[in-house]
Length: 214
Ligand code: ADP
Ligand code: AMP
Image (cartoon, rainbow, N blue to C red; front, top):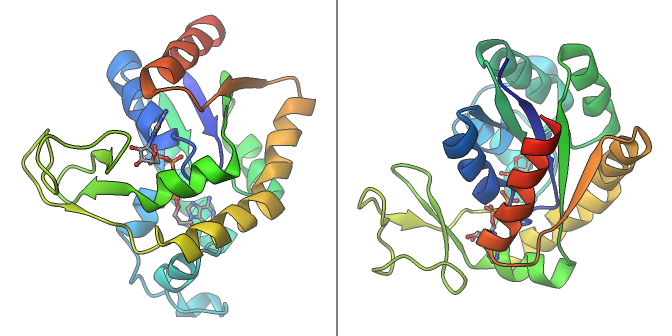
């Protein structure tokens, strides 16, 4: 069976960057709630009677999209995946509980990065609108500014990657998601990786951890 990998870390810790490498190396699916929700920002969720009527309204404020919406996305995606790297979920203890009822995990990685580094990474992030490849204006720039090396697509800045929203997302992470990291740590499942080295240095530790545990 293909590995079931969970990757945890604050916004900007490098989860997407390392997940792309995991997908190439281990042949699993990338299941990412952030991308799934960005593709459905305008979805009508008014029937749920929540604070806002679309996922996008939560996302642009840096708040979590309600569990009822996110759990369903993950359940469908995991049913369809053979192996997977799950990125962006669970983001609170209720989601972690729901996940434990859906699937078993072989390895839980945690990318450890300091808050000041996170803000610089988030505000400099650029994403290809065609293929989703991720760049950074300073730390991993494309060969030609604004153009994807992989497919020639245009690069854009995510609406929630402004400094103000990035700081709010980190606050929301500390409040809701840091306890999830503690939860897996107490379960003895957590593999802590220093996320502050170069992408290649982080990858050396990530790939070791997957090979050893999955
Ligand atoms: P996450 O998915 O955890 O939010 P990303 O993988 O999108 O994070 O990375 C956030 C930004 O930081 C991107 O612009 C990416 O190019 C850059 N980045 C990722 N890993 C590193 C690293 N090890 N060192 C420097 N910059 C990095
Ligand atoms: P990300 O791409 O992981 O940085 O996620 C971007 C935004 O999508 C977050 O700030 C949330 O608004 C929303 N989001 C992504 N994953 C979840 C989740 N598991 N639970 C709630 N909201 C989420």
